[in-house]
Length: 284
Length: 275
Image (cartoon, rainbow over all chains, first blue to last red; front, top):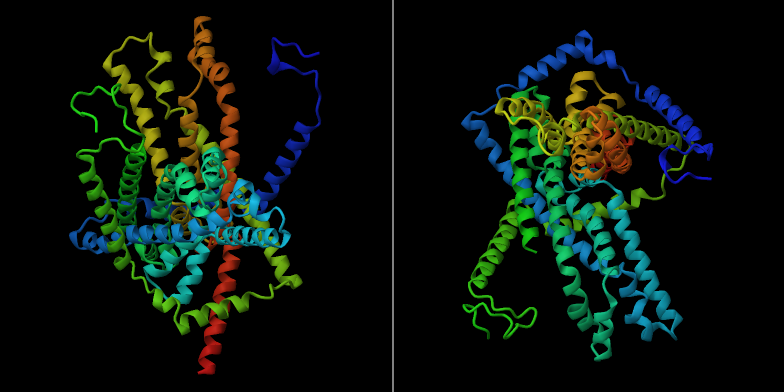
C-alpha cells in the first residue's frame, strides 16, 4: 500500500524503467561523446588558448569609428526590411493554406455537414485539399529557413531577396500550422447561430470566425516577426543580405572588434523589436 | 451616443464594438499609416524582384531544381552517409543540450532575485545597503551572462568556436550548449520566480537554513519543470544541429551544403555547356 503521508519516498513499487532509462542515457552519452569528438584539452592547449586569447582581446574595444558605423547602417536596416517583408509573405502563404488545413472549416464540422453528407465524391475532394495543404505547410517548415536561404541564394542571387523568400516560406509553413490550430479551437456556437440565420459560408467566416481568432493571430504573428528579425540577421551568413553577411565577413577577416559591434547592434535591434511588439500585444 | 464626460455607463451601455472612440480614431489612422509606410519602405529596401522569380528564366531554374530533386538518391552509400550525418546531428544536439542544462542550472540560481537578495528569504535580514549591494553583484553578473549567452545566435557561436577549436562537430556542440544555456537560464529563472511559497515558509519556520530551503523547498518544485523545458529545447536543438553544419560544425547540415553546392556546380557547368 502507498502511504499517503510520504508520496515522494515510496519505494514499494519497484520498476525497471528508471534503470533502463539510466542505461540508455549513459550509452547515448558515451556514444555521443565519442562521435562528437569532444576534445576538452583543445580549448586549453596552446593553439586553442592562443585562439581564445586572440578572440577575446580582439573584441575590445568594439569598432566604433563613424565610417564603420555608417557602413553598418544599411545592413541593419536591411535586416529589419527582410524580416518585415518575409513575415508579410509568410502571412500571405500561411493564411490561405492555414484555412484550407483547418479540418472544421474545409472538411467536416457544422459548416460542411449539409454539403457533404450525401456526397462522398465531394467529401473526398475536400479531404484531399485538406491533406494537400497540410502536407505543403509541413514541407515548408520541415526545411529550415537556413537551407531555404541557401537554395534561394543559388536560384536568385546574393542579396536580401533570397532572405525574404526563405523567411517567407519557412515561416509561412509555421504560421499556417499555428493559424489552423487557432482556427480549430474556435467556439462553434456563434458559427451555428450565424448559420441558423441563413448566413453563407463566407459570411460565417467573416462574422463568426475571424473576430474570434484575430487577436490570437495578430499576437502570434508579431511573435514570429520577432523571430524573423533574429533569423534574418543570421541568414546573411549564407549570403542572404542583412547583418549576418557582415558578421561573416568580419569573422573571416579576424576583425573581432567589428563582430562585437555588430552583435551589439543586433542586440539593440532585437530588444527594440521585442519591446515594440510586446507593447502592441499589450494593447490587443 | 452616450455622454462620455459624465462617465455614467449604467445608463446606456454601448454595444460591444460600438464604444465611442473619440481621439483614438486619429491615433489609429496614424498607426495604420505608419505600418503601411513600414511595409512599403521594407518592400523597396529588400530588393524584391518577383517578376524575376516568375520570369521564364527564374521559373525554369526552379523547375530544374525540382526536377533534379527526383528521384531521391537511395543508393547505399548516400543512405549510409546520411545516416552517419543524422547520428552525428543527434549526438551534437544531445551533448549540446546536456551542456546547456549544466550551464543554465549553474547560473540560474544566481540570477534569481528571490534567491539572491529579496523576498521571503531575506525579510529578516538587516537591510543595510552594502549588504544588499554585495548580493546584487553576483545577481547582476549572472543575469548579464545569461543575456550575452542568449543574444548571440547559435550560428555565430558556431563561427566563434570553429575559429577556436577548428572544424567538426565539437564546435557545433559547444555552440549549441552556450546559446541554449542562456535560453534555458531564462526559462529556469521564470520557473524559479513562480515557485510556491508555502513549503518555503514552513521550512523557514522550522529553522532551516537557506541552503536547506533551496534543496528541500525549492529544488523539488522546480526540477521537473526544468527537465521538461530542457527536453523541449532538445527538440528545438535537433533542428538547429542539422543546420549548424553550414558553417562547418558537423552534422547533416554539412552534407546538405555539400550536396547542394555540388549539384549547383554541376548544373551551372551543364548550362554553360548548353549555351
